[in-house]
Amino acid sequence: MADAAAATARAAATYKQLKEDFVSNLSGGSVIEVAQVCAVAPIATFLWSALQTRQSLFKPYTPIAFIVDFLLNVGALLLSVTLYSRYPLLLDVLLLGAAVAVYAAPPDASAPTRKKKPQRPPNAPSQAKPAPLGMLSTKPFLTTYRGNMMVVTCICILAVDFRLFPRRFAKVETWGTSLMDMGVGSFVFSAGIVASRAVLRERAEGRVTPLGTRLARSVRHSLPLLALGLVRLLSVKAVDYAEHVTEYGVHWNFFFTLGFLPPLVALCQSGLRLVPSYAGLALLLAGLYQLALELAGLKAYILAGPRTNLLSMNREGVFSFWGYLAIFLAGQDVGMLVLPRNPEAAAPGASSPGSAAARSARGSCSAWRRGRPAGRRSTSSLPTTPTASASPCRGAWPTCPTSCGWRPSTARCCWPLPRSTRGCSRASTGRRTRAPRRRRTTAPRAACCAPTTATACPSSCSPTS
Image (cartoon, rainbow, N blue to C red; front, side, top):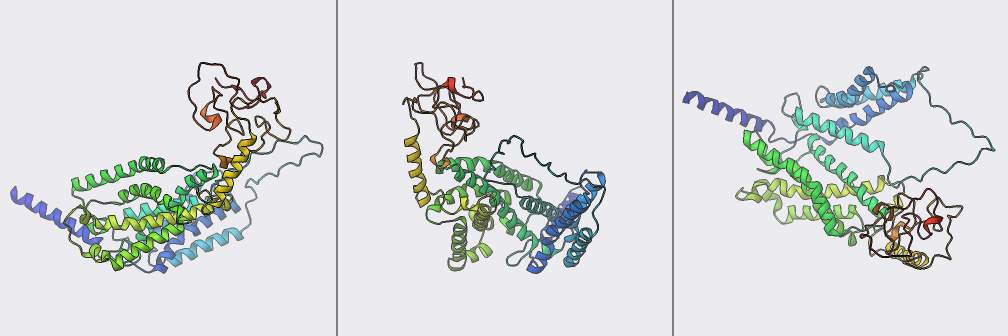
């Protein structure tokens, strides 16, 4: 029995070593080949669009449409890293040729066509104007990019342990370029693009979030990723699973990298007072990291340093984190350009406290606040009904400068209620108020009709309790 157990242990150790050797000491492939493999995703999307535009294949979404959809968005990507891994350009040409053929074919006459909007008669009453579009918009190309990236990531993680998956696509040991190395960078880059939505929304509302609040929110968002990293660490160590130590270190993994990014990004946002854009921060951080690698001996320490303490055991993951942080900041800068409907609103320094735009906004805020009613001031000189050009509940103030720190409420109000007004909900005033005092006040109790009296409010505005 002892001999059998020893033989089993030796076989397990040999299998683990073979598995580690299978993903170690790799040098990658050419940049052109990686680009050809990555080109399969947009070409497959182009073919999908051609089928929908010319043949309306995916409306209604039948079982045949599901099969074609799966083959284009998953099967083509799977073929690019397996059977067509040696000839990715051939797969690109085949898919592109199919898309051109679909566009050249006559459209399906039985497919439902878009109905034209009926023309209004000249004497018809004017309709209400549609609500204005928000600053942020949905970008289909960004959704497609992130979806294809996620599919390729899942395929590569599952296929890297099989011989069918080319070794040149797996992560390199020291220097080189590979598909999986570009994948982790692309994952962080896309996360940076999406993270810029919160910054754009904050700038549109004219708010400046304090550093402590940003750190608290970022830590709350990081906790699930850090928990996943801890679970992966414990499970790998518990089952003695084969792991590539020189990839991230003894204990570090990619979940820890993703988890520590938000707090560091929140700290880097404070540097916008000195550096005008996220791209500048990314270049500065990447340049300092490269100088540390070349001039401070960091490169030799990462490649051949002894593993004597917790830092040295995880030096690959700890020091590669700064490169990922630079990529994340570069993604945020791209998101500031592609996500807003008006790119000028995301201009560098647009909402920085010390910028000229911020000083001008503060000046306009002061003038606006001087003109609006405050506290218990008499409202007899103000109109008690909305102006003809204003929407209900807007009263005599048809516009509301969001840079003044106040935003229009769900009731379309255009000014903050005075401090003495009670019974105002947070949704209607944009800020939290204290509990009502037990005393009389001459201020109106209507949450969306100040400074007019409650009796003069439009019927669409109901006082809050």
